[in-house]
Amino acid sequence: MSSVNSVGEEVARKNEGGTDMGTTVSTSTNRNSEIEMVMLENISKVYYGNKINGNNSKVNSSRNSSTVLLEHIVLDNLNLRITKGEFVTIVGPSGCGKSTLLNILAGIDTSYTGRILIDGAPIEKSPDTDRIIIFQEGALFPWLTVYENIDFGLKIAKISKEKRREIVMHYIDMVQLTCFAHAFVHQLSGGMKQRVAIARALVLNPKILLMDEPFAALDVQTRRMLYDQLVRIHEKTNKTIIFVTHNINEAVALGDRAIVMSAKIAGIKKEFIIDLPRPRQLDHPLINSITSAIIEESKEMYISDSSFTRNNINYRDDRPELELGSLRPQLA
Image (cartoon, rainbow, N blue to C red; front, side):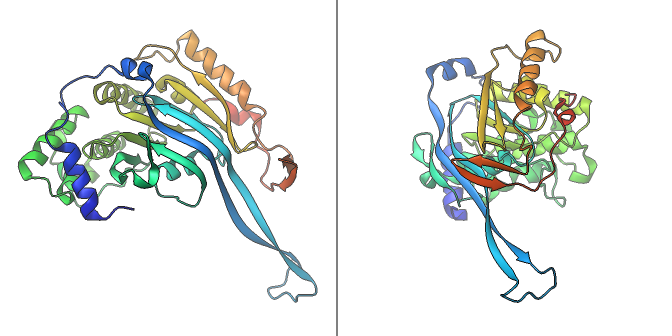
């Protein structure tokens, strides 16, 4: 991970003079040019653990017990390419590797095999500030105001106070929290907190926003309002967004492309192109059609037996089988 100084220098460089923050960028033009922002090649991730067979007593003798090394393959030679300005949603059941993939892209998890390029450069040489992750809980500082939370990263980067104020107020206006700039976190609703988290990420001017179920804890009305705001922010900033969710309706309503991941194959089962203008109506026939197709694809992607075979190797999985009823999409 980069030091505070090097991160600060990179943030200062990206914000120095740089982008016209008031300009709306056409995302379709950049996507059609197919400038590759993210390339994942043969990404594999395995978790290892020990299992003791034999006597159930606290202390086992070597005669009646043995230790078996277990491996759980989360990602198995996954390949994925994402173009600049693309909004990609990733959907799949718990344990299929969605969040693991996001953590790898964020640089949080480095124990994997394979190759990752960010904007043409190896991920090891890509500044941390090129990829900012937003979690389900905004992880805001409760003792700071909205303004101070959003200003925090820029302050560490040692950007001048005047420049910081310009940048911070621009993004506070963008997420429509101008009247709450000096409010504390405990005075905000759940949706407001997530908007603060999004603004705090955007001020660092990342190339990629990584979003790990950011709206999962919010009520239906708040989620729908944030869908519209996120789409508007995407149109204005042209950021590449990788958005992980359990909610199939959400994945289809937001993404240019929906990636369906499966625990059974430890990777991507299918991709769906969603060629619809935004904002999208959730009851649009094509939205319903794609949602139904993803549910149909999902019916066989669970590990339904206690053992399965991959690459001629037998694996065991002691997790209970998930009922197909759980595949019904949540209301977005």
